Amino acid sequence: MPKILKMSRKLFIETYGCQMNFSDSEIVGSILSDDNCVLEKDINEANIILINTCSIRENAEIKVFNRLKQLRHLKKNNPLLIIGVIGCMAERLKEELLKKEPSVDLIVGPDAYRDLPKLLKEIDLGGKAVQTLLSEDETYDDILPVRMDSNGVSAFISIMRGCQNFCTYCVVPYTRGKERSRNPQTIINEAKTLVENGFKEVTLLGQNVNSYIWKEENESVNFSKLLSLVAEVSPLLRVRFATSHPKDLSDELIETIAKYKNICKSIHLPMQAGSSGVLKKMNRKYTREWYIDRVNSIKKIIPNCGLSTDVIAGFCGETEDDHLQTLSLMQEVGFDSAFMFKYSERPDTAAAKHFENDVPEDVKSRRLEEIIALQQKLSLESNKKDIGKTFEILVEGQSKRSKKQLFGRNTQNKVIIFTSSDEKIGDYVNVTVVDCTAATLIGELGD
Image (cartoon, rainbow, N blue to C red; front, side, top):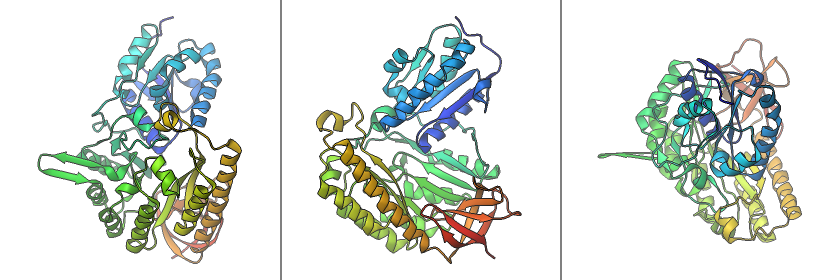
């Protein structure tokens, strides 16, 4: 049955995965808002439902398939409803999605969002629409994202797209294409617009932000220079970034972070494994020794810098000694926090093609449990060191536990909860830490 084209349609976007996906959803929201779509918060009221997907881990894809099954009843009740899958999973599994989910009308990869208005018109005429071609130059740098579910304080700015590191376990180069950077002036303009609209914090996003490079005639802007340009937009604008790759973390960048008060003193530096042998097999392009050297530079140049990381347990061929090296590197660095996962083989990656996924699931689980237990200990130790210290935080919202409590993050990216009846979201306040858990600092308003 042909869809009925309406002058104004209600659009609901549900996002899975990383910060980059949330940024992409805001780009999609902007593109479709310009095409007579209105963002809708109630999925039951929507005419168009888009599921923005992630393919980094198998569990993420399973979650999306389960979600699509849950949405079948909406389609049954409203045959004119358009359901679309966008993002990395759409790129990777377009044929499987069409075969398994007859309720899906639209499949769009991360480089084809500009085509959404045209594709929706094709669906209005009957049938389905698919566009998953990757681009070598698309950065969406002329599109001002719609800030969805925003607290009006913090926002993401995507500075680059794609990745060409080709870590053997990762699908991103195949689902998001080659690395390309945005024109720095468009990034600065976006930051200025956010400040003019009352935002107090931006996070610069990319698969590997510190490989950002823009070249035009005789001018070249690397990530260190871009970071300083964004920091200079306003001294009241906090600047964060994610994610860094250890192979590209230069002393120049570390010194830039140290130089500007409004660049947050927090670096997310994924290590993935503590064994040089495993890192080589992962094609991470650095050794354990290189990683330690970069951490030592951070600690020397920015003594109070927050450090977080990613860790994979049970990669192909990982021995017990390799696992112990991961634990020892975590202990040596003393991370404030970490994202920790079991290795999940992704089809079509180099690891899937060339290595045997030979670490038994029970061994992976046990190693992951040991990694999590160690990080809990390290996080608690790190937070205890902050008791008695006073931090300036940016208030981001109310605590989930009590409306009387507010929360914000300090420059090291640690969450602090405090009780207040006067402060409001968007305020800068000084808070003294009086207690903590492994995950959270608990504070009282200071002077």
